[in-house]
Image (tube, rainbow, N blue to C red; front, side):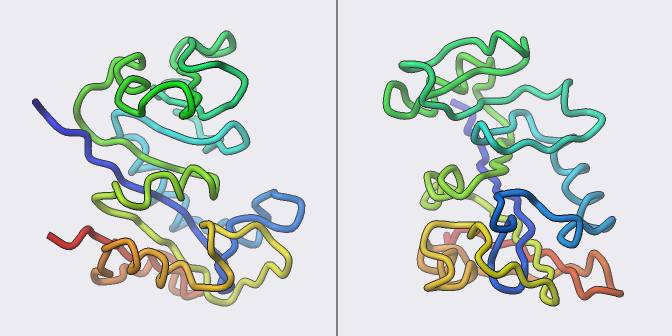
Length: 185
């Protein structure tokens, strides 16, 4: 049976936050190089997975199949607002069942947040693409993963068996890079 490849994507501030204190991604955490990297990745994913407060807000967003985590359904249900979306409550159904309902049995699954959703897949990621904006600080912001800021995002990924690959520069003017964290095999 073909497998699902689970890949995570997030950009974080130097202090490990993905949003400000109002749970909004500020303009200061948006960089053209990272936006292009993220858009290209999602354009090649077979399925997007995120919480009900996360979204990618891109031109191709309406075309993408997605699973949205929510407690507003018992298990799995079609999204009445988007025929390409499946609503999923992890307490009522497995991830594989949600993927099957979305019509995806193999291929690339892009996990795009928020923190609870990222945390659910920590032991399942094949690759986690961690973009870092080291000069941005979001005091009191929303951490990218459960356990941040007590531990850095990098420490959390390493603790879950992922190993850093070679960083790739996305925006040299602001030192924004992306590092692939891959499962130890």
